[in-house]
Structures are given as C-alpha cells and as structure tokens.
Amino acid sequence: MVVAGRAKKVTTHTLQEMKRAHEKISMLTAYDFSLARLVDEAGIDVILVGDSASNVMAGNDTTVPITLEHMIYHAKCVVNAVDRALVVVDMPFGTYQGDSKLALKSAIRILKESGGHAVKLEGGIEIVDSIKRILTAGIPVMGHLGLTPQSIYKFGTYSVRAEEEEEAKKLMSDAHALQEAGCFSVVFEKIPADLAGEVSKSLEIPTIGIGGGPECDGQVLVLHDMLGITKQFSPRFLRRYASLGDTIDAAVKKYISDIRSGDFPNNDESY
Ligand code: KIV
Image (tube, rainbow, N blue to C red; front, side, top):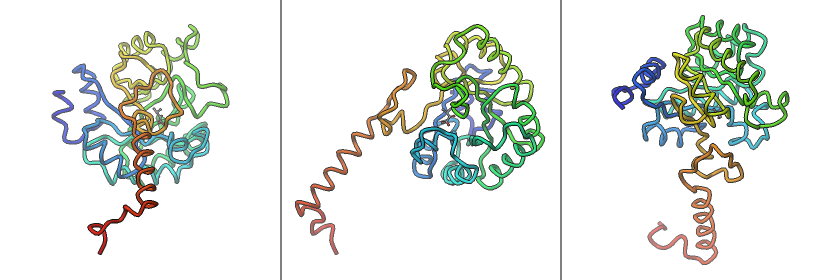
C-alpha cells in the first residue's frame, strides 16, 4: 500500500505507479452521492460511474438505453461526494462509436458538466480513432475489452469471451492497440484468467478485471451486486461482501409492522 497510501488524490499516474510497485488497484461502481461518499471514505482507489446504471438504477435489461445526460447526472452526483478516488465515467452507447468528432464532444461534455476525471469506452482497434481524438483534449481514457455489454445484440449472450484462439489473439492485439493509442488502463470483463494474466504481463498500463482472474493489476465489481442489493444476478466472478437486500427487507418489514401496531412513533419520537 506504499503508493496508494501516499496518494491524497488518486490519479492515472498513481495507478501506473501502483502497477510498477505490484500494488493491486481496487475499483467499484457508484452512481449516487450517498454510496459514493461511503465508498470513497472506505478508501477505494477508483470509482466507476458505470453505464450499468442503466440496469441497476433504471431497471433496463441492457446498458444500451442510457443517455449522455443520464451519465452526466450520475457522474455529477458521485463527483460531489468524492475526495480521494479517481472518478471514471462510462461513455454511453451511441456517443463515440464510428465518429471521433462526436466522441470528443461527448467526452468534453462529461468532464465539463460532471467534473469526472476520465472516461471509459468499450472496444478495441475499431474505436482507436475516437480514443486518440479524445486524448487530444487531455481527457484520460480507460479501455474495456472482453465482454462488452454495449455490444450485446452483436454477441447475443453474456458468456465468457476469448476462449477460442482467434478471439484471444484479437484481444491481445486490441489491448496493445489501446495502450499505443494512449489509454491509461483497460478493463478485462469475463475472459479466461490465463489470458488476462498473459496480456496483463505484456502491457505497461494497468489492467482491471471483472471475471478476469487474479493476475489482473486490479479488480472491479458492481457495488449493488457485491453488497447483495441486486440478488437475482450471480455470475461466478461475483463475491458478495454483504446481504444488504435482506437487511433492507427486514428493516422495511419492521417499520411497516411498527406503524400498524401503533409502536411508531412513540412519545420520544413526537413533538
Ligand atoms: O458499467 C459497468 O459497471 C462496467 C463494469 C462492469 C466494468 O463497465
């Protein structure tokens, strides 16, 4: 914890140093002020304002419908809470693919209107032009390879990616293309652990795994999943650190029964 412990504010440079010092990077999602504050105070290195907000916050089946305005709103709520963590904001579907000028405009809006520190984009070689143009404005970019949920309609499933040799080779070359384009880090989602380890070793930039095994330079989970708030989603890579869904259920049931029995509010809770 030498590098992370020294950092009053985590920057992209801190993450690079952590990789060099073999210190693991911790990352979690957050979408609102209250939870972002708790996560930041607990000492997380990176907060991702993920487009998983589309599922977790809005109840959509995919990440496809979330808009730039929604992402800016969530990112601003998180930025208002954070003192130390690096805040990375997902660029939503349709705001960067196939049009590098649009990508730059979208990234500038995210940084200017939310105060976030960096953006994350899904894809490899096909989005390198967008990444390079965003970098011309001095906006740090995180990549995302493997399972890329914005392409769900292309792949049709959320299964493990890059198990076949050809796809594994493409992932290796995409990761290097992202590094050469100037990304400061890359997320590997749901790929074989051996492949993630091999690519991580071959890169200078830190890799962050979600279902990418222990040899990635850091790990990320969706906060609501690891806290046990979203109970229906349980992929193999998910470790639950709390059962807040059950805690909330019990608390709400007790509240309802206290109202019905006349126990709440009592004299001490009244004016
Ligand atoms: O949107 C998100 O939460 C993500 C993580 C799964 C990495 O992109």
